[in-house]
Image (tube, rainbow, N blue to C red; front, top):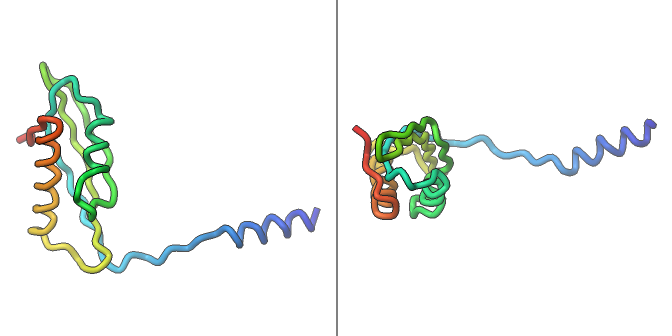
Length: 112
């Protein structure tokens, strides 16, 4: 029994991976937009995954509700650069690029 426990402990040590803490803070933004009612959330996710914005670390749907002939989404976006701290203007440009991609591919409109 003791050998089994020691073996399990040794194995967990070998497979444990540690990651260095980030040197720079990430930036969290929420973005709200509407799309035609036939657009699936998976299509929105696909645009985020394939976008040219490489500094987009993560995204997740925060809110959703159907409208008369559209759907409204709010996504939480996390931007991160491992070489520097973002300035607001830089994140604004990244967010604008995402909106342009959503607009071009899914006919999305920024919700005001």
